[in-house]
Image (cartoon, rainbow, N blue to C red):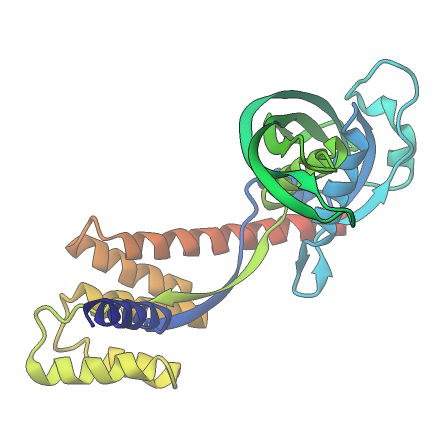
Length: 326
């Protein structure tokens, strides 16, 4: 009985967490760097190294997925890779890409290293006796040796404008490992592991280069400290309304402000409502007021960070528009 009660209580807690009162906030958030937004079109050129081609395709796929309000953030093409054994980031190495009209050329290199190492043993059952029909009649447990396949990708890339300006550079060392044992028929594919690492690096490049649209449910604050009993009742009603009518919930939070001017909960929740509507300046003011009362409160700080990112994304959009008008 006690175990059943514990399971029931756990289920209720999980349900409560899943049904937490939230306000939906949608917006376009900034890329990690600004300069690449000055390039409307990018030619993906020579990527050297064993993992170079895989990395080039992964980045192309990731950047083609950067679509903001129905429009691709970049126009992408593949340029003919530079010839010869000397790898260079000089713009003259890829004149064809610039002649094709690209605002910038991306080149890179991706070296691959891999090795297998001992990884202990695994216990398996092994047949020791079979009958006349080949059916196993007796088994025993044995330990088979295992290995770990460790793959390292060292990607580097540069994005250079047609004027020769370095717009973006990124490098990393990323690794993955797969364990396999002697009883298994298939060993891990190095190429598939390289592909996995390349996709992860390409996703990071996409976040650096292009803004992204996010539609999030941000949890409201629920503390009723300092509120009168009538206001606490009205606040509970407002919380319930977040599940059915967000506009009415926001209006109810607004009605509570006059009686609770120093409530961080009310200030933050109204700020969240304004952020939802795109009234970013007014939301900023309310988050600032909440922080003036409670400087360590995380939620208003997170709200200010979201707003800062949305404003920066607008600046990046203006950079792209300037690039289009050139």
